[in-house]
Image 1: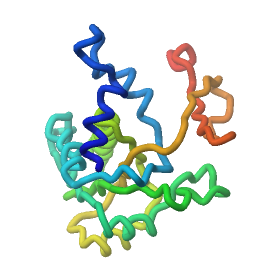
Image 2: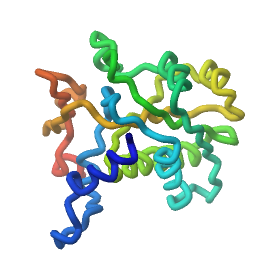
Image 3: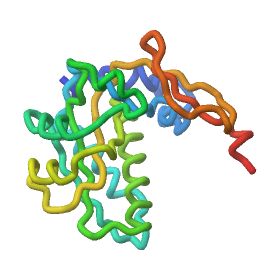
Length: 209
């Protein structure tokens, strides 16, 4: 269902390029839609091929010293349960026990490394994760970067040949988001109210020093 969904939703999300002079790949638009999603529409499944398209961005992005040490495991189907039981989502909202039943991520990308981590590798990791999320948004999906996971168990469960550095959940969001302008000294903690997930963000005037 995911492939049909992506084809049908592209024009709705980004507009018809034949009807507008604006770029359908506006970076600002992609960034606005790239929220950390912790609840997914389980009616929209994600195929291995869609995940391959997302992983493929890593053939085009920068790599420190061009080491290209990251490796990726695509996880769909029954194997998603092996990941779900070994991750934690929504650390700032522990009382909600996210994800809610029936809104679990339908797919994952496990990011590994074929060498020991160093500052350059972690730079590559950040570039990779952000790029994959932007690709997911471009094709009508969403995601969540997860660092709170049981690396040892996931590595054993999925028979990974390398150390896992991050888990990227992928699916179609079932959540509503709103960005909230804050001052630098205000709380940065995200929160929920009446079904809306609020994300505090510092304004550009306060970021520039």
